Image 1 (spheres, rainbow over the protein chains, first blue to last red):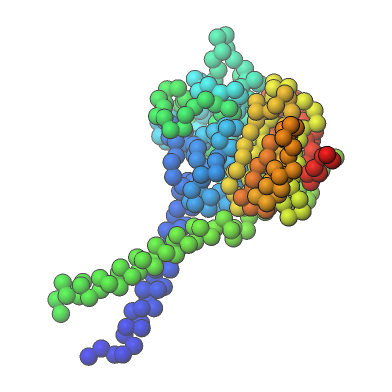
Image 2 (cartoon, each protein chain N blue to C red):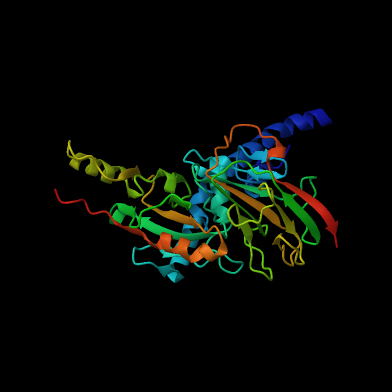
Length: 195
Length: 200
């Protein structure tokens, strides 16, 4: 015959482990993106449903925890790349080239950010380029060099950190977030060399 | 007692654990937007205290830079301002004083304090270069509609906010770094105040 408090012991351990497991699940959900419906194209990821009133509870929780105010649905879409086009994590010690094409949009901006979404400290105080301000080759094509040391043409410095993100914002784009996209219609991020 | 009996004995406890975990998970996700201490609204309330407030009532921030950014993941190429609102003091009236020419991007999005965007627009949606928006709770909007006369349609766009507190985020694109001050002045040219119905 079991001791009479055995069941109480079990019940309280069930309570505690259920509580712990629940919080672990919540922490995991909040750290992995913004809820449901990510739009992934090559290395780029956007979360189109964060911009409207039909946002899901997971996305709301993730935005509230990080303190972000996303772009509205009709305003634009923010794409973030954590890796280069080959799938390797972006590393500030390496050099990259970002080249077009870009999906159509009224304006776009392309810049670098830390993993927490802050602009990166760099000697030139330039954090990105806009579709109007970028230097283009004849015919309109362009590319951007990402390197710690100055490069001719469009150049962004990832600063002295290690990991960084490339952030592409398409303002007033006719892209349909529900469609599937060919990665070749988005900018490519090519690793050139590593220090 | 063999292994199978023991597993059957523990099964209800395992199910109970999973059920509790699921409930804790769902409740904590739903509560996060209400209790998160550093959500966008809280950060903007803080930032607006030290920001420059334009005569029209928009708090404008310094250019987003590594050591000065009102919120994470904001575009450094945007001049930004915010109107915080509390509808218990009356409906918010947001309008442009300078005509929007349609050459430069100007985005205005309305967020509830708990993080839902209930309306977002750009300068493309302006009416003859003007933006004129009234945000109220359901009661205030119904009151405004009751006062409408048949032959004079309302000038402004009316929005019903899901919660009484929130903010309007205003972003103007600086196409080149040298355009920043111009973009900032178009943010400052927006007026946010408490809506006063026109006298009949």
